Amino acid sequence: MFMKRIAKIFCVFAVIVTSAIVYSCQDDALSETVTDALNQQSELTRLLTSMSANGNVTSSVIDSTDCFRIKLPVQVLANGQQVTVADTADYDNVEAVFNQITTGYDHLSFIFPITIIYIDGTQQEVTSQAQYSNLVRTCNASSQFINSNCVSLTYPITVYGYNSSLQMENTYVVNNNTQLYPILLNLGANEYYSINYPVTLNIAGQSLAVSNNTQLQLAINAAVANCRPTAPEVPETPSCSNPGILTDSLKIYIPFSGSVHDLKGGTVTAPADTIFVADRNGNARCALSFNGGQAIRIRASAANVIKDGDELSISLWFKMQNTNPANLEHLFTKGPNGTNGFDLSVYDLNKPRFGAQGGEVWDTNWGTDVGLPTDTANWHHLVLTLSANYEAKLYRDGVLQNTLQFVNGSIGTAMLDYYLGQGFTGYLDDLRVYKKVLTQANVQTLHTLEGDCNTCLN
Image (cartoon, rainbow, N blue to C red; front, side, top):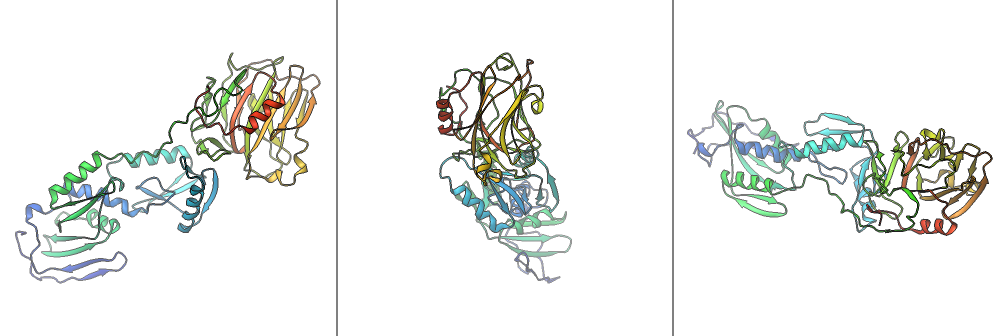
């Protein structure tokens, strides 16, 4: 027992309705000896505080850490589909999107800026995916928080408190982490507590009953040491799903399979806040989102240079997310914005076009479908071919839309870097650049090809 029995010197009884913790005076002895009592300096107190800190953040489908929660409302991309989460009821809408795909890896990202709320109530604005990912990694690696997927307490538990200054004992019936955390966090220098055993732990889905402080501390430490839940789930490296298809004279090949790499070996620079989305076949993290202020830069080299006198073909998939008809949005260019090179873009009611010195060829049939200029729901396949004598052909969704013979055409004699997505708002995928003219049959093959969600060429 404690060194002193506590008489009813003070009889304080309070019920905190908001947290549903019961406080009561005790005129009988506590069940533990002073050697088993815990205080603010105890190692077990630190562990329990780290565990119960998670209770102040409600887990949800849009959260990826126990350290903070996302302030609502927020816009998210769930497997590439934009969803407005105005309140917690909208979590079901995100789950519904994930349930549309029964296999593979679900991916969720945010449309920034967002605001996060820490367990102590402080808030922080987050302006990019890179910043958010760093905050999650820092939080999940911190010893201040023990992930509830590693180990958690099974409630309710009973805690006996003793204040040596006031000579008063209390009993706390605790029903969740949110109630336990402030008790432990606010322990004073003269305050002690003991736990009514046995206590049951949930360790990675398995129950374990412990009978004293030593067993509880050992069990928590063992659970943390053997648990690795902090890293976000990473999809398996995709196999080569489209091996060897139309690789002859292929100079640039970027399928955006969870990374931004040119599988032909070119040097690619991507923005830090790159966001991956689902491709046209629903493969998660196999296409790239652009917000209008981002661009991919592909370094020009002897291996991929295309200049006057060379044949050229560009194949890519795009999905518009901007309905402003007046915006010029570059899909793929040689030179910044196509300066001194060429420019494959959308403009004037989001109509596809290709421009170079000597002319420009437009998708003249784009306007015949009144829904296309504002179509943000569907992917479209775009192919441009340019012969050595500057005959340009523009294909959309496997169909030839227009042909133009450039007069005094030029795509530049200099070796210039290539850019993907300058000023573009939407999604791009499966970029292929050839130093040859693709045939109508080649275009059909690429159009019917399943989304390139692979990290290999052959």
